[in-house]
Length: 183
Image (cartoon, helix red, strand yellow):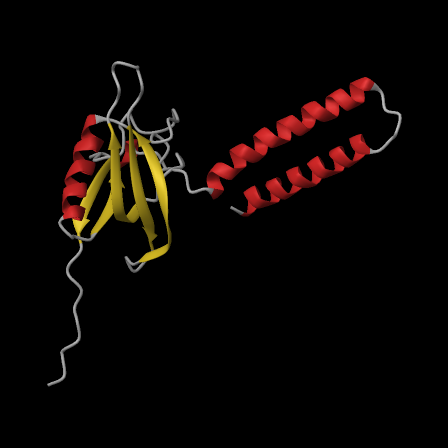
C-alpha cells in the first residue's frame, strides 16, 4: 500500500513538472513535446492501474494460510462468452492466537469445481449466522512433495507440488462465551 502511494505521488509530480514545462514558452523541439505528451499518457495509465489497489478491488495475490471468512461471491464460468469463472473471498488474516486482525481484504481465485463447492457450503454457513475460519491445504500425504512456499501452486508457479490446487477447509468457530449476568 505504501509503495502504491509513493508511485502515485511520483507520477503526479512528474505529470505536473511535464505539463509546466510544456506550458512555458520555451523553444522545445517537436519530438521532445511529443515524447512528453506520450510519457504523461503512460503515467495516467500507471496511475489508473495503481488506483485499483486503493479502490478495494479484489486482488489475485496469494491468500494467507489461515483466515477468518466474512463473505464469498462465486462467479460461474460463462461458456457462451468463454469467460473464466472466479471465486471472491472477503477475509481477514488470523494471528498466532487465532484471532482476526487487520482490515478485511477481497481476494479472487480461479474457479474450479472443488473450490466452488467448498465456498458454496461456507456461504450457506455464513448466511446461517455462523462464524467461519478458513485454511488453505493441499491434502498431500507425503510432506516431502510439498513446496516450501505453500502458495506457489496457487499462483501458477512450476515449483509447486505435483499440480495440486489448494483446497480450502472451513471450520465453525464456537459461540463466544459471555460473562455471567449479575443477579
